[in-house]
Length: 312
Ligand SMILES: NC(=O)c1ccc[n+]([C@@H]2O[C@H](COP(=O)([O-])OP(=O)(O)OC[C@H]3O[C@@H](n4cnc5c(N)ncnc54)[C@H](OP(=O)(O)O)[C@@H]3O)[C@@H](O)[C@H]2O)c1
Image (cartoon, rainbow, N blue to C red; front, side):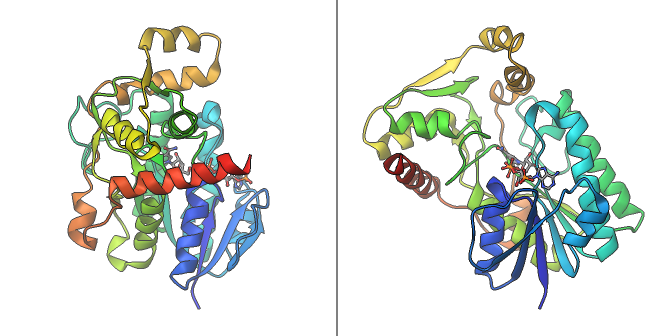
C-alpha cells in the first residue's frame, strides 16, 4: 500500500493527515514533538533540517507533503533549511513532493487577482525568503532531481486555527467573547481567506492526481468577499453584533519599533491595503469545483471555538 508522509503536524499538517487517512491512505506524520494521538496516523519524530533524519522518516513514501513552518520572526534563517531537508528526503525516496506555500512570494499586485502566472516579485523579507524557497524547489525539479507539485493558499482560518492567522483567536475568539475583532488594514476590501479543510483536500488532490505534478496550483476555498462581510456573517452566527477594531498602519509601524512580531506583521500589511483576491480557476478547471461555502466554514470554525470556550 502507498504511504504518504506529511512533514508538519501543525494547523495544516494535522488536517491533511486526517484527510488522507479518511481517503484510506496509509499516512505517517513527522515533526519534532509528538502531537496529540490521532487514530490511524503513524507518527515519527525527526528534525527536518537534518536530511538524513528526514529521509529516514520518509522511508517508503510515494508522496511527501511539506507543511512545515518556521518561527515568524526567523523565516530567512530557519525556513529554507526545513524545506531543504524535506527536498533531500524526496530526492532519496523518489517520492512526489507536494509543498504548501502562502502568497507572500508574489508581493503587492496593485489589487490584481493573483494567478499562478504572476511573477514572484516580493518586496518583503519574508516574501523574498518564500520566493527563494520556491526557486530552489523548481530548480531541483528542472534538474530532474525530484517531482514537485506546489499548492498555494491565502490567509487561512478553520477549526484549531488560533494564533498563527489573522482570522484566528483575535477574530473568532473575540467575537465569541463579545469583543471587537482585531484587524490590520481596511476591512472593506475584498480579501480571499482560505479554509484549512479545503487546503487539506486540495493538497491531497495534488498528491493523488497525476495531472498535478510539475505545476503550481492555487487551492480553492470559500468565495471571496470583504473582511467586513465575513465578520458580519460571523456576527449573524454568534447572535450579536461584532465590531471591527482596525489598527491603523501608523500604529502598527510605531508598535513594530519595540515588538518583533509587529515588525513582521507590518511588512505584510500591504495585503490588507489593496484587494487581495486569489484566482483558483486553474485548479477548478482541471480538478473540478471545490471549496466549502463560507457560511459552513465559519459555522464549523465557530463550533470548534465554542468547544474550546466550554472546555476552559
Ligand atoms: N497562516 C496562514 O494563514 C497560512 C496561509 C497559507 C499558507 N500558509 C503556510 O502553510 C504552511 C504550514 O503552516 P502551519 O500554520 O500549518 O504551520 P504550523 O502550525 O506553525 O506548524 C508547523 C509544523 O512544523 C513542525 N516543525 C517545525 N520545525 C521543525 C523541524 N525542524 N523538524 C520537523 N518539524 C518541524 C512543527 O512541529 P514541531 O515543532 O513539533 O517540530 C509543526 O508541526 C507554511 O508554509 C505557511 O506559511 C500559512
